[in-house]
Length: 255
Image 1 (cartoon, rainbow, N blue to C red):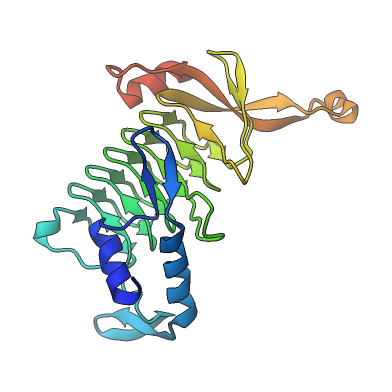
Image 2: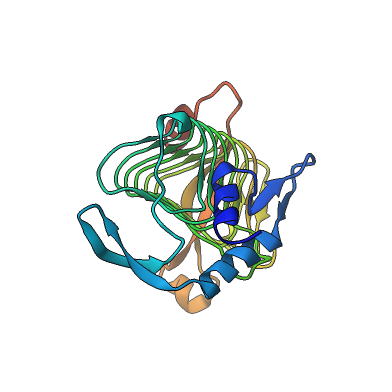
């Protein structure tokens, strides 16, 4: 599968870059990433544009901006948003302007993508997720076997938060505004008194229903400690139950 056939299948959700197994593990469909990379390698850069301005932009030939009809049940409020070809938006998705969804991304039904948010290439976003204003969900296209950023069902990503390098946010987790998570960000679970770490080969995973806030910890060097220096980390301050909505859980944690 390649070219327009691949893009159509990605948009329909028939083909995905990554899929969740019955056991809860995520597997990367490397062949899909390979096919996307092949599309980039074999496609020419051509003029693109808007109606009345046909040469305003330049991009790879097959990668137009997607158009949605009433049957899609997708709401994209006017004002500078774009969804690139090869991205799936499920029914009931709401996109506030301006925002961008890149090639290979999957956005599940009922999810909100707020203003100035980015859904990067191949990112997998579940159902009923709230991606708040200015949140950045990073893209992971290469290497083909690398896990994309994954946000499971019912999670909440706060304003200005950044999730990068294949980080997995499990269902119902709440990520506070401004928190930056990469594959190797240290996370300290204050509830279970444990440290969570990942690597580029096995990126960080945030547990289900965790409420995660930005934090700091003292640097290890004597010179740094003498100067009161700290480095960024993340803190799991509580776990919300299924009856506590995301906003309430975050407000209680911040207090």
